[in-house]
Image 1 (cartoon, one colour):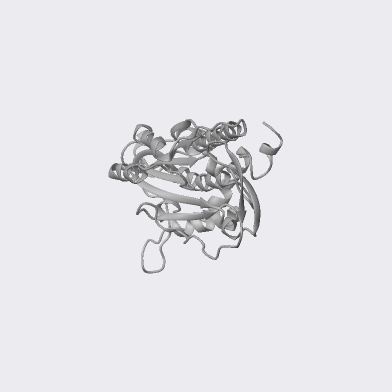
Image 2: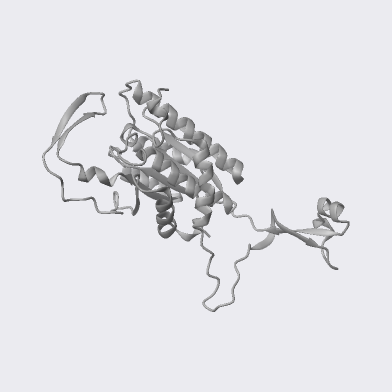
Length: 301
């Protein structure tokens, strides 16, 4: 890969996505337990298999719940407490097609999409959920199966970095083929089961004529969420001549005679579905705050 494709904001770095865990958790909010003051947010405990805590043994505790490791270390009987499992699976869909591989300010739209999905993914695994990945490349897809805990999020980050690198290389080498977003979403039903959440981060340029139908199909058994990644400075480019390359590889020059006063309405629906708009030119902290203020609190509790 050339040096230009490794520049900051162009290449996707695993270390940067891992570091987003701290930013993601800093915007988490505690759930409101009651209208009256005095509530304390705690993990809900039950007879699941996920260990919530250990404590000293008291008379009447079930000996089958003894924690032999803690007992051996302390010399005092300890038992394990469990929390109820919630088999929550979230599929992160990252659009790395050519329309996403550009940007004017801080980062490419594709990089901003990956960052936003990473913020959501870290929140999911911190709540005991599992994350999976569907990355849409110019002429291919990359899938990472659902897995829980930090290991699952690290697998997703590895998939994001690999897919983004492949997408950059395909476009750099002049590949003219590109798939529509709607055709890539056919795989959703084979990746995650019913009841899962599907978060799609894309510019939604050239999504295909069947996007609305595909979203409706997903919504029958899953919960789709749309994130539109834009670069708002595009609408305020100064007058001048700009070289561009079309999807088929053709190069041409366009002339911008005046600055447009019309800007896309933020969070405007796509095919009737509500959408969160993320600006690739803004800081990642701004994006994290916007996600925290917009997405369902089930992501952020």
